[in-house]
Amino acid sequence: MFPTLHVGGVVFPTTGLVILLGTWLGLTLVERTANRVGQNQQLLYGVAVTAVFTGFIGARLTFVIQYWSAFQENLFNIIWPLNTGYNVWGGVVLGLVGAFFYARAKRLPFWPTLDALTPALVFALMIVSLADFVGGPGYGALTAVPWGVTQFGVRRHPVQLYELIVGGLALLIWWRASRPMRYEVERPFWLTTAVYSAGRLFVDAFRDNVPVVGDGYHLLQILSLLVLLAALFRLGQLAKPAPES
Image (cartoon, rainbow, N blue to C red; front, side, top):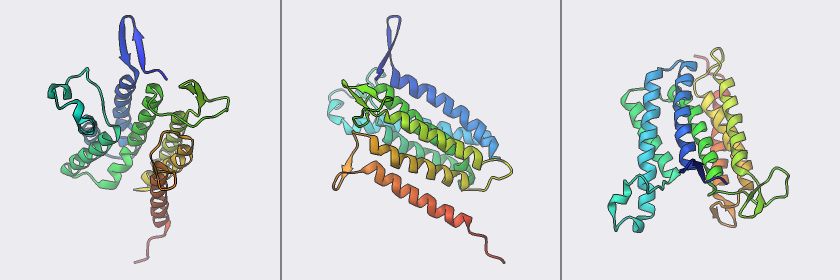
């Protein structure tokens, strides 16, 4: 849609700008959510910074491995800042791994920590969707709806904007579930996960460029369904009254 931003004679990649701004906002969000669920703000901020740092390295290394033939002739291109290219999902996975080991080293309680970090995780997914929208690598199915956007000369569903709406709803659910007088460990995470995965299960039906398996089933929808079922199962367990001693 808008792959570059021209300021004077300088051209900036909009995807990179969105990710940088989103990273700053996401770290600010961690500070607020940590206080809301009674967790140590500095330690949670450290977890988030570790996730960003390892995720950035992981995204770059995954991209290099994926397109090794483009780098093997000149290894300096791997770290050359003007030679961009990142694999988002490789960064997400390694970022989560880095955050997990940092939290474990600091002996942070697993579920309260995850509850506090859930909004930042959802916000990160929203930033990926927004970067996908402005950069244009992803696109929705053909449509005639009045709110469609023009890509490649045809009107398509603004599927990334749908994902932003889903993320916003998930954040609202987290905010309600984490109210100080009603906060129960694990519930904010699983409720938010259920809402987001259900939304993605619906929204990804309007995405065009998706990996498929079998007879054309969208891989992302299958993953969303599995996550949704797991979240509902765990919420059902949490809803059961504790056995009397």
